[in-house]
Image 1 (cartoon, helix red, strand yellow):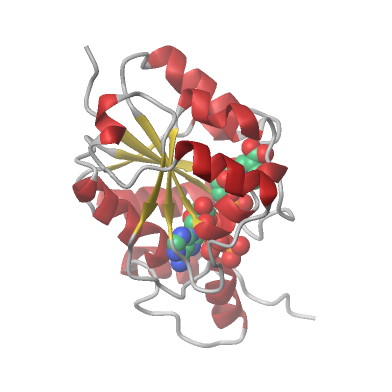
Image 2 (cartoon, rainbow, N blue to C red; image 1 turned 90 degrees about the horizontal axis):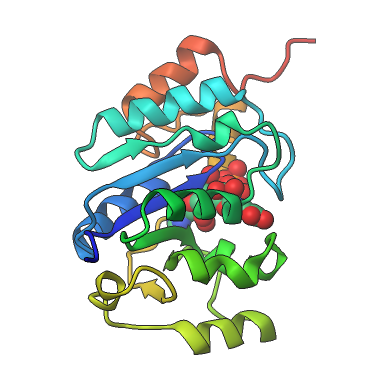
Length: 216
Ligand SMILES: Nc1ncnc2c1ncn2[C@@H]1O[C@H](COP(=O)(O)OP(=O)(O)OP(=O)(O)O)[C@@H](O)[C@H]1O
Ligand SMILES: O=C(O)c1ccc[n+]([C@@H]2O[C@H](COP(=O)([O-])O)[C@@H](O)[C@H]2O)c1
């Protein structure tokens, strides 16, 4: 029997912010998910080395999750000493949860570049993709992504509970112009990023002196 769906939000989370958390909470409700797992990556496949260590990024994700019912932290990618390919994570989760719909959440920037991901054509064999709109990223896809969306898109949220994988759902979320890059730059420049991220996460950044420019 098919179980209640879960959400998966992978990210570098350097640091985690409201642009991650609001769509996660709204999708928990919209898709009637039993939980959303926040999955910090170890080595981001397509990004420069994060400014802060995996330990700090995990601690910030834990602080954010501890404030919100339904958000939990999944540390599995931090335990793999190699690039954090989503396909590997989804294969592991599918083996553990064969009857559970897996909804991999991402922003529109990620969907627009999905055909650069490792094994991208197999992702939908293991999970649904649930995509939040993000300022600066229009759904004007290249030929690969257009074909993928055309073959798999559904506007029926309930479809994601009826099958365990294989759908693309575009979420009509309010767009939040927030990024980790902007927050890191705010801190570096001595500006105040309050309200763009949870207060305990900002306190952690200040306590640990993260994202400060090196003193020359
Ligand atoms: N403001 C946002 N709205 C919608 N989705 C977002 C937003 N910010 C991040 N995401 C999504 O969350 C996931 C993890 O993002 P990530 O941790 O790389 O944050 P980021 O803000 O994009 O980081 P950076 O600025 O360092 O590139 C990605 O799928 C990304 O598209
Ligand atoms: O599997 C891949 O090739 C791949 C390529 C780029 C990003 N991802 C994953 O997508 C999520 C968001 O990535 P990022 O770089 O926006 O933090 C995170 O879980 C990454 O590990 C995965």
